[in-house]
Amino acid sequence: MPKIAVDEFGNKKSRSILGGRATILCYEKEPLLWHYRQKKKGSKTYLHRALNEPDLASAVRRAEELYLTLVNEDKPENALISDAIDAWITIKKDRQSAGQLTEATVKGVRSGLGSVIRYYLIKEKRLNRISDIKKDTFLTFNQWRVTQSWKVIERCGPLKPPTGSTIKRDLIQMKDWYKNFLIPRGYATDIPLTETISVRQDQLESNPPIPLEKDWPTIYRYFEKWATEVEHLGNGDRASYYRQMMRHFVLISYGAGTRPKELLGVIEKIKVPHPEGGLVEQDVVKGGIRWCDVEVEPQTHHTVDGKPFEFLEALIYIKESKTGKPRECPTNTGEFFLRWRRYCDQFRKEKGLPKITPHDYVFFNPFTNRPYPYSQINKSWQQMRTNLSLVLTPSKSGKPYTVYSLRSSYITNQINEGKD
Image (tube, rainbow, N blue to C red; front, top):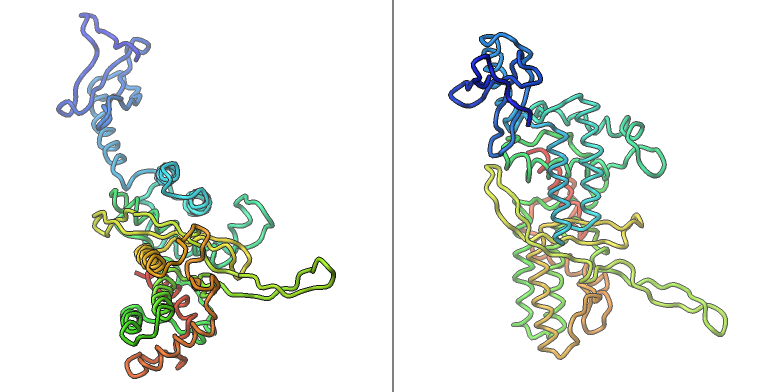
């Protein structure tokens, strides 16, 4: 630290101002010019600013104004956008190092928030601080993402507009940043509004979503009761297991937004060369998740007023999807996976079946080690619709709920959450 200059009487040229909150002083290298010094809150280091004032009275006035400016800048909402993004990415990296997150998840945060959202706010919108982000700042994000972003943001692969799902992931990263970092730490009070996500109308009409607050409680309570009734009907072990499987599949599908066959798996016949010549048909499994494809971890989130709470998050790795590309699905279905696993372990133990290994499929028939036929799943679903036909609310399209409605329900719920 540079030495403080002394006056003609040998006294240090240092003056405390604002009741000791800051100091003005001259250094030996510039003994005639006053400088400003303020101790950082909660730190042993100092903030330094050159006042370039030779007059003491003028230096005091400048220092008092500077103090107010620095105090205002030190407020959380006045933090730099770039710094707040970097801080959140660092937290994600630390959680990855602790084994709580995968490398792919952190990579998604760096891409969506660290690259796209950062560019949009700082370069496109020319914003600097968190307080500059207004309620309507992201209402033009979708249009910019489709028309401009892919031209200005460096990326691997061909230059083309991003898909709707990619834009949605970007906005999910932004909302996660707000919900679990900016709002709990006082940087912001609300999540910015986003544009309504377009969903193909024909898909919603064919597979109408199940309203979260109306029909969904009726449906999941039906399957809860249905799964235990079989014990009283005397239908045997296989029926008991199947009904519990169906119950948990419905709960997890509604909370994960996955396609039915991505969780269940299907048997497809393919032709393979025979050693003695010709081709023979062989059964192969397409889709389906194994126990090693599911990671359940307690995660801490925060309420709107900043209070922390924990819930079990399940990260599902979908290796075979409709698009052919693997993906990760973070969901709030951890409790259902754990309960289903406890049931499976106990069932196998009681029936003398082999213990579950990490490579066993989550929803397969344990007696055959094959997926349940999709026709059987659909029949159970149709039976539910028939039994609840007098209490379920008709959809706007007049079409009945399908198994695929579990996926469209998740999409619709995400859209409605974005509107809040």
